[in-house]
Image 1 (cartoon, helix red, strand yellow):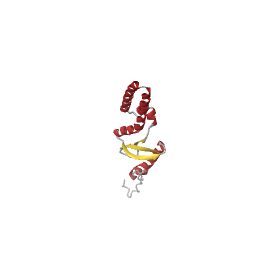
Image 2: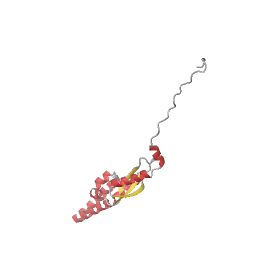
Image 3: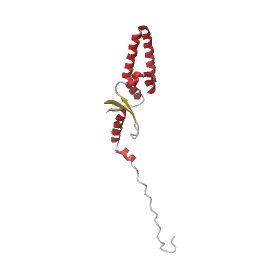
Image 4: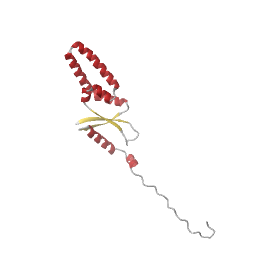
Length: 154
């Protein structure tokens, strides 16, 4: 069972929510391919910080030796893997997203299904009434004028 946090941007209507689900815990893609993961999620400041730390660790490992290089690279990979989803939530919070709910599910698709089903069930009745079909407008029937009472009536 995985836990996902649902971050949602405040919207004027609940009909089309702008929600992002972010998994809690270690992020393997970020640990193994940190620069690509940072680019994919548009975390430019994180990419610059990662490259700066990697450069510093590269210089230190040249001085310390090859064993230190392995330890430094593994340490950096673990640090990125542990922190990546928190960095993503932090960036989304700065874009105006707010924590809406926490969902436990087996996969991302299942978590989305659970969240949106609960969101639809908790929608106010007014929103459901807006989606209900409207009845056709009633046209007034044309009534034929009665026969004139006198020959001079129009």
